[in-house]
Image (cartoon, rainbow, N blue to C red):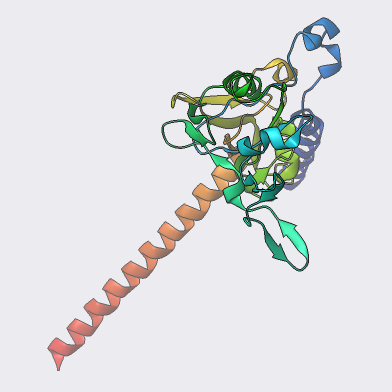
Length: 280
């Protein structure tokens, strides 16, 4: 058999082997159906976000008598006639009312918000339930005799996704929660160069500490991981796989070689010009 035929046969075998092994590298959560139901049920899928510095909160207090709680709702006040009025923080664009950011509470660098009547409240590290209970205990029954209902919404739950995805960017959730798969779906999924076994998660906690974790999208145990569900301001980086890294290195080497050749030719040209000038 000629060398050419041997080379062709080797190429065909390599392609076939690659074709057989590739599908095992592409699916997410391989064999996830084998995880016992008891294990999945033991994992909490819904968690209230923990407030951190920079969060924007929308806090509304309701009662059977709206005038009793108006003073505790940002942007509302009672007129001399006893009616509820709202400050003009809303803007109207093309006939649509848009809520201004000044209608929300911004958690400052110390983890506090300034609340009407109550004053400063430290909320960093607390959940919605804990904050609602604290506000309720502060106003009832001291200021109002009707037990209120308190609704708290986190308005800027968002994660950042960069690296080997089709649409990197900052993505926001309207329901205060997002898991790693939902985040990747928003970014258009990984591209062909993304390393699905080496996804980096950077997280800043409410106390200022930072965590870095590596996630494997092929591994079914990701569903049981405490990092499957994301927290606000999480940063996800999709690292390049080996082929992407190799391509980048080859390109770098190509540019280095080209620059070296051009530099060498320039030096030779300068030398030749110098010799010609000496002979004149």
